[in-house]
Image (tube, rainbow, N blue to C red):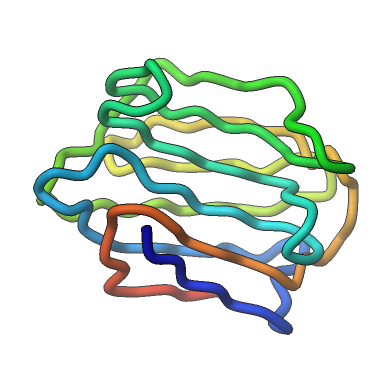
Length: 134
């Protein structure tokens, strides 16, 4: 399981993060994590092809104080093994608005409540081809 960490950058309220990548042909899952540091995660987006007892579902969550919080599961699953995906994350003071390749959206609360996060990691079985904050 490879991981790409981006530290000491800033993703601020009002900005948009766009991630483009390709899951491996035999991928089970991958995850995008955003948080204040590598210990707490405000937004964990985990597309699961077949992992943790789930098939073809996107699970979102937060990790605070050493514990996972309440999972949020969304209905749409536009990801395909070996095919390019795009995830667009808009950041407001109260929530993250996550747009997926098929146009579906996930609203996830900004549970930690900060206006800036400086740690992003992408882990699991996907190759990231583009990463942009605007």
